[in-house]
Image (cartoon, rainbow, N blue to C red; front, side):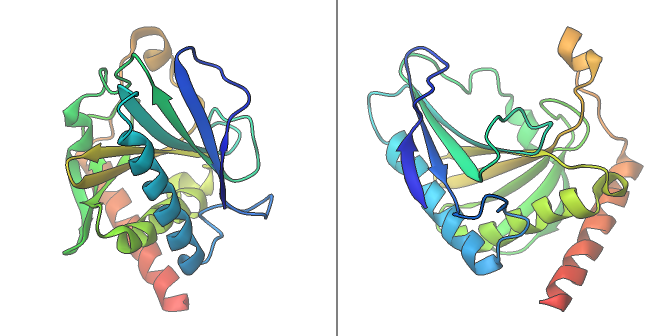
Amino acid sequence: MIWLDNKYNTIENTYQTLIIESEDHYGDISNYSYAYNRRVINYIIKSFLKLSNQSRFKSVAMFKNYGPLSGGSLRHPHTQIVGFENKDIYSEISEESFLGYKIYADKYVSVNISTKPTMGYCEFNIKSRTSYIDKTSDVIKDVVGFILNKYFNKSCDSYNLFFFLQNNNLICKVVPRFIVSPYYVGYRVSQVNNTERIKDIKYEFLNYVKECHFEK
C-alpha cells in the first residue's frame, strides 16, 4: 500500500490524494482475504484521521469507487482522500441518511439500511467506534461481497464507499451503484424500498454472511 498525491487535480482549493491498496490490478475488498482487508481498512482510516486533523482543511472526504457505474476512472484498487480548504463537503448530508432499519448488530458494529437514503433505494450504513477497525473491516467486506455476489439477483457490479467521522465514531456508507434514476438527476428525489423489501434484503444478507463464514 502507498499513499500518493493525485496529480490530476479536478477541484480548486483541494488537496487530492489516493491510496493504492494492492499490487493486484484486479484486487478489491470483495476478493481480498479478511486479513489483508483489515490491513487495507486500518491503513486508510489512519490516513483519513491524519488528514482530518490538519487545521488547513475545513473538511476532509474519503471514498472508494469500484466498477463501471461507480463514477471512477481508475481500475487499479484505490481509495481517495481529499482535503477541502474552504468547503464543508458534508454540508448537504442529512443526519437522517445514517438512520435506518437495523439488519445486523454486535457489541462492536451495527449495520442498517437507510430509510432516508442520500441517493436512493439501498444504502448500507456500517457504524462502529474508531477503535474497532478490525471488526468493521470484516463487516465492510461482507457487505461489499453481498452487493457484488448476491444483491439484486447478482446484477450489481459497482459500488461506492463513503467514510464519515462523528466524534469517536466511524460510519461507512456502502452504496450499490446502477444507472442513476432520472428522479435523482433532475429533481434530487431519492426513491426508497418499502419495509418488506428491506426485510428481504436483511435475510438475504444474513444468509450470505453465514455461507461465507461457514466456508472460511
